[in-house]
Every structure is written in structure tokens, then in C-alpha cells.
Image (tube, rainbow, N blue to C red; front, side, top):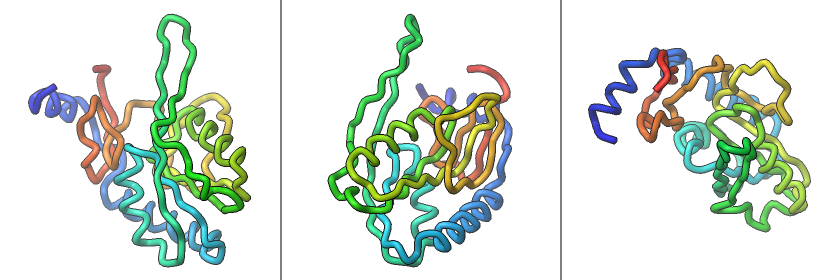
Amino acid sequence: MNREEALQIFRQSEEIVSAADVEASISRMAQAIRAEMSEAFPLLLSVMGGAAVFTGMLLPRLDFPLEFDYIHLTRYRNSTQGSKEMQWRVAPAESVKDRIVLVLDDILDEGETMAAIRDRILAMGAKRFLSAVLCEKQLNKDKPLYPDFRGFEVPDRYVFGCGMDAKGYWRNLPAIRALTDDL
């Protein structure tokens, strides 16, 4: 990949959420999280690497005592059999035991990755599991979980910006864009 390919991706996309709307959404979400968790001393876990930007925007707005760490779970698809395999690169630490845990991620698509994270954290003895996502993709099917805190819904298109990438590019955008053509 190169600079021209990255620019071509950008040209084949349109802004669907402005940077100002992203900021306002994160402020609203922070207020809701404060109302729910400010007295709980929660453990916040950021899902790497897509949630890095969202986490960096949200954490300074949470003006109460909390602990912070990260996890990294990758998902591989076997195109010939249609099965899904998840691999923990950085699993949750034992510090989840007896804690209220809030997991931060950039997007909730089908919900399978977040459900796997929830199941692992609860199996490790967490008192309560909550999730916060910058955006949730609108799909015409049920999901194994829905976020407790959500910035906004996005259409069932390939979206990028604010930590989400398009072929490794554009995580750094302050707005959310959607591809207009298949790449």
C-alpha cells in the first residue's frame, strides 16, 4: 500500500458523521458513563487497536477514579468453511475479578467479538460487565449483545475514521466516513 492508494480510498468515501458530531457524542456518552459508574471505581479496558482513538477522546472526560488497561482480541475468518476463530493477543488480567468492568471499542458490528470479551471477563469473576462503543452498525439481524453506551449508529457500510481503518489507513481522521464503492 502507498499514499496514492490511501488517497483513492478517501476519494471513494463520504463523510457520514462530522468531527463535531463525534465530539458531541463522546461528551454525551461520558456524561452517561459518569452517571452510571462514578461511584463504582470501575476497571476500563480498551480493545486494541481500533479503540485507541476513541479511548483517548473519552478517558479525559471521565473525571472520577478508575483503573485503565487494554486487551487485544483478533478475529480470523476461514473463507472456505465460514467459521470464525478468535485469538487473544493480550487477554484480560486477573484484576477483573470482583470488579465492574467497562470495555471500550470503536465499533460493534455483529457483536461476536464483544460477546467473546464479555464471556471471558465474566468467566474470570467480574462482578459486572458493561460495554461502550463509539458506533454501532445497523444490521437487520439480532446480535449476541448490544452496547450499554453508544455514541451513534452507522449504516451497514464499511466505515472508517476515529480509530477504524480502511485497509490500514485513515484511523487518524476526526470524522467517520463510509466507502461509496467496494474496494
